[in-house]
Structure formats: C-alpha cells, structure tokens
Image: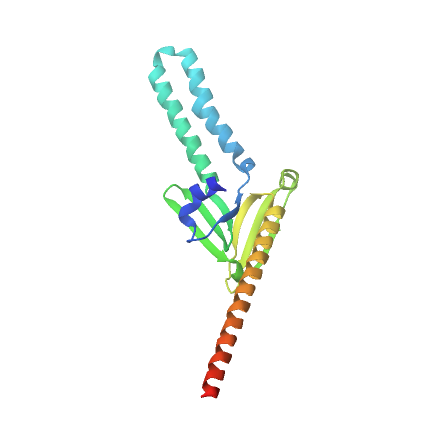
Length: 191
C-alpha cells in the first residue's frame, strides 16, 4: 500500500491509511489500447519500412502514440475507490486537469451494493459498485470495477472495524465523563 499512499496521498486526511484500492477493470480499456497501439506503433512502423528516409516523422508519430497510451493509463489508474481506515474515497479523473473526488465516512454509509450485468461482466468478473450515503440522493459509484463482490466485502469489513473502534472510544469517553461527574458531585456534597 506504500505505492498507493504515494500516488493517492494528497486525497488522504492526516492519520488516514489506505487499506485497499479498487480500480476499474483493465479489460474495459482494451479496445482503446489496441487502437492506440496500432495507430501509434504498428502503422508508423509499417510506414518506416516503406519510407525509411522519414525516420524523424515516424519517431515523432510513435512518441505521440506513447503519450496517448500514458494518457489512457492515467485515466484508468485514477478512476478508483480508496478504502481507508475511516472512509471510502471516490476519485474520478476524466483528464489530467479534471479530477472529481467524493468521500463517504464509514459512519455515514447507509449501504454498499454491486451489480454484475451481462455475459462478459459475469465471465470476466467485473461490474458496478455503489456506496450509498445517509441522507444523500445519489450514491458514489465505481463503474466496471474488478471483482466487485470482494470490494463490497472489504468495505463492509473496514466499516465494521471502524464502527467497533468508534463505539469503544465513545463508550470510554462516556465512562470518563460519568466518572468525572460523580467525582465532582461527591466533592460538592462533601463540602
């Protein structure tokens, strides 16, 4: 998770740690990658075979293809759910300069669900996962998530751990408050 903390550290609050990262399935961008590979590398390679004197334009063409592949991989990598010790963070990056984030803390989660629809999603095990926030009309959704059933279980497990820890802290605080009230009451009664 050190790599995830490096890439997604700017989205975390102080003391927050990433437990799991849920990405969009890499299978969903295979068409784009095949097209970019063909247009960015195979086609200029064939062009170079027939016109070897045009090496510089072919190299520029391939460099542009490499940039396009990096751009597509960036878009894929930053379409993600971060499952932390306190919340679920949705990050959606359409471009390098267009990033949308949404945070739902565990105590505000009303429900977690997933949907796998269709033949290919069933065979390749990817689908949509939704986290519903208490009082909010629209849930946060990660479309085409890899292994959505596992991600749902991970979110619910960390939510349960968070709530147990929070309940323990609340119980301890309440106990300390009552003890202090009793001590103060006995001091005022004793005078």
